[in-house]
Image 1 (tube, rainbow, N blue to C red):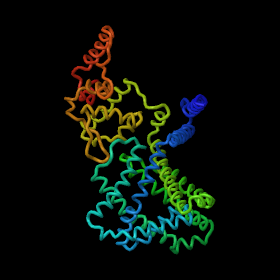
Image 2: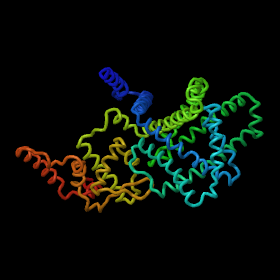
Image 3: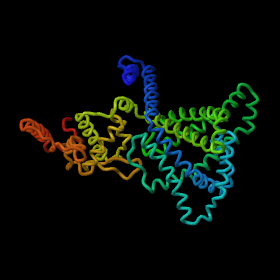
Image 4: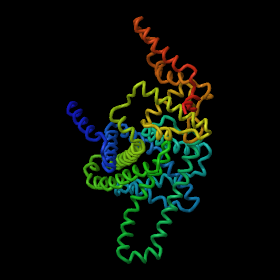
Length: 443
């Protein structure tokens, strides 16, 4: 079985990663689409996205009422709290009559929460519960985008609460503006004229898809703690939005035909259906973000296919190149480059770039800035930072944690060769500083 699987993977690999010399632009684009689709499906089958989706289902059940309570409290102050309820019932629509029942219960829970009488401690716990949900979501997206660092507590508090409190207001405002435009005399006039009437009807049917895709695109750009390009977010949002709306129709059909489950589980079947629908929704949302990652980082496609393994020579050259870019920006007084900017200027996957950066930071050659997104700066003066230290940072990586070179019992003749190699590197890079990488003396 494993041999058959390996042969199949080899055939798919040969088909999707052929030599690109002589291929047209359309053929290269088609290959990129097929590669992204193939690798995204592999990630889905690996189970990491599924585990994250299941974790978010549990967190959602704990946080959905406090989250909606905060949003409703802001909308109540504006007299528009009744406008947000259709969003909830729209999400629960695939559950049929059971969804209506769940929605009514959630609205009842929210009405029972009186934010004004909770007190400082109660309000603090309410906000903490909501922030913990968004933090779990951020961690899931950071895993997809291979981002190790998360937002600080201050950034979470300001960014998350602004979206939670202002987001529903913006959505209600957008719905109101859309309804006003659709009911205007001009639209009514053109609706009676063909083919404008058919086009307006089609636009009305496509509006839910467009709104879902817009929300997904915003999530893909805002939640990960890295810079996500709009084009990549839109690709992921279009695919995920279409899958979510389509799965809603299919799930509604499944609920209607699942009478035997209702007979077995009785009233508990409502909870089971809700859990399944939440899981499907989170899985689709994470799948779209995974798709956006590969669209923005096509170099990671090959790494996902072949695994993360790079030679010491590549590590050394990549470390020198990163130090040169970071030092040049610092020398010219430019903004510190972020991880995304460094990856764009280098033909290497983002994970590999992050791996080498971590080694440079562990040896105190590079430090992170306090900006958002995080930038990278030289840790010392360029005249003090030595090139040999950069080489040693990647050559001796992980020795302190796992296995040191000095622990290996080498024969004397082999040990002499190793010492001569180290001495040759030391001699060739003697007195070479990072400043020499910035100032090209050969020109």
